[in-house]
Image (tube, rainbow, N blue to C red; front, side, top):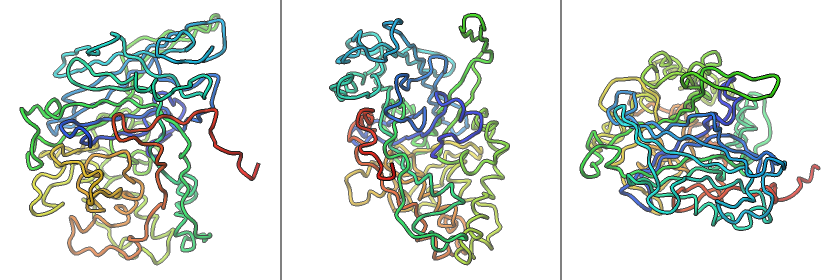
Length: 470
């Protein structure tokens, strides 16, 4: 979770495993949208000597649909190159790394950004400084990376066509009680009412001290919507759909004599992510790998899993007597189809709200949809980590910010909180208000400016103490 190890095949290929996608109007630069795609889940900061890195054999892409077709109108492609400075040592760092060009960084990563529009590809270059885009190293510790914030800041680049880009290790901003949720659907605060009762307790953020690899790009809104000025929230052009993919070559040959690897053939998609948790907990096991290979425009084949989600049937069983109204509701879940697959009409959000996140068409396409005309609410009274369910129109499922509690939002939605948006006769069970994973985010995982996810946890000091049980 959100999509960490969400399918059998991709769980064995972490460098191609997309974990989270974020899309939001930048709070400190509201004329832009920030798109973030995270990869390589559940990184232990101290996992040396072979620290984490992007795959130089993987094509990473962030796709934007600005027509409602379920196909990309704009794609940003990221290709990484790994350079070994000193092949005669096993060390990642042979001394303190104080700059992105230090020879003491023994396994450097650089990358290119290519923008694809209408079949035309343009390689984007930084506007100043080096012509090469560099990732920062992993955050090892005070001797190997003594001034990590400076290294990370130096890895933020402004590109020739107006974008700002960063690629490298970050603190994991997603928060989830993995240990509880996957233990037969338990929610620690509600544990006494579970089918197999336990003790009530606060949730535990299982990934609070983990890192992730981030590709972040900040783009002028007008470059995404193809409008002269940023569109109003009521303008159909304001809505974009976003998803990320990772692809590998079709053929991989290993020479048993030398151990060298040769790859050939076209790239084939092996990972895909838009809205959080869809492949994780909606798509059935036998279709998970297949879902990762498919484009959003082909998602009508998965519609039944969204219309009749397995978790809706499990909740009344796991919490006897708490979800009787949900148990009796057998209609297709049009609310979930809107959230995940078509976008939410403005009339559903409110009578005077205009376009919502609906893109005007009827194509079933799972994407993270964002209305770029809705202003950020960070720092205002209307901000809520529960997004639309908390009355905050700038939060998930209108795009997704790094601090949005998407697990609780989606649990409440599946439990029936959003059914009245499409069926006024339905009354949610009282238990819906109590549904929560009760997990707080780790404040050090965020920063107020691009790339918004905080500097990664250092291996030397993580975890901060030996658990008492040891």
